[in-house]
Image (cartoon, rainbow, N blue to C red; front, side, top):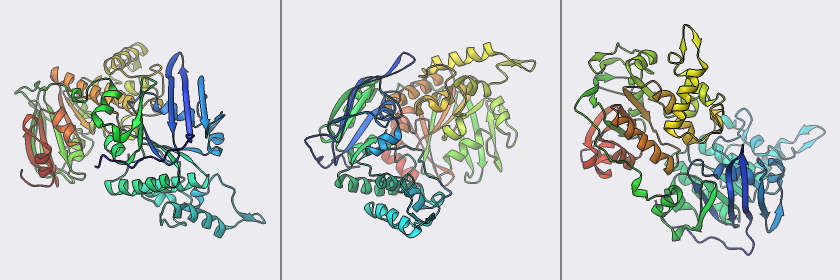
Length: 507
């Protein structure tokens, strides 16, 4: 991606400012004198690790939380937002990863939600409603059928409908939380075109993202937060990715990956002639203490391979053995877990945790055998394994009884890991272990992976990021169309070689 950005439009008075914002929960300071200033007609990146205070800052700016100290200014005038509706009326709108799209009503109705419905004699004037909705889509240069159900739209189309609704509510400050998380590369390009168009219309955009390449392609200025404080604000053109990372995490970017070298010659897992829906004749071994990375393009079979190994998906041929013990054909998750194979899935929110349940309940549910005897669950045992897991993984939470859905993405991932590590697996499978996680938490995950390997655990990790595969793994397998197309020791691998394998070519 390009690392240049157009110069921001400067104005005498910022569109939106926050000065010396303080917010604490149960005595813990989430924000300590944080500040942010956004100009009209600029895209401003808000960056920081999970837990740095970004989400709290956004919630203060949009009326979800009342600050315990500090001032918020709109066009130079101090304002107080009692709730989200008041913030919206002031033109401040936030769009989150989980878009508030109602799938069972039309595009036009979704766009006009919150606006006064045009009616006559108690009857909705549908032509007028659709005309107003079309005006907002036209501002975004989008041709989305107004009568289509919103649930039938693609992810990027749903995002555009959410943008159109914000514009219909006269949003002048738009706060976007990880807007590209579920989009393809082509959809991201389309989104960037729309965001640049909104910038040209004078909309101030706050762009919250962990994808630093996007920030340097799209944004004009950036603000970095750490531990609830604002560390840096500067023009993107005057910064670089290494500076951003070191400011976010308080250490050099090159320190993300721990040293390798824990692999032994003892075979921990052997797979022979494995077939599934996509996987075809896959054979490999993984060793005790080894971190084995698996890469490949989307649809290459890499995630299916992990599901088969974990017993979550049946296989039609081939054998799987943990050490010298062969697993029965399609053993199921319970038998695979008993054999020592545990999976941390890619979709942690839908497959890895129960968001409404507490941290301790999530960990306990995956370890019923360890926390119960004679059919009785021991609260003391639950407390012990929860305390140990939260300490070992440095989970940031108010207490073990906090619902997992209230945690940051990185801490949710740590809870998934904690519940699986409590089982002391011989083989830990991890599908995209750092997706949606900031660079600081990524470094923690990498150190944890290497620490597990040092104790003899075999870690098999799928990743879409080639630099991550090279940095965290001892050895790398690349899949193409369901088969292993290449293998390399990480110390000898480079991105060009791995990408060639991803496309079924030899380096």
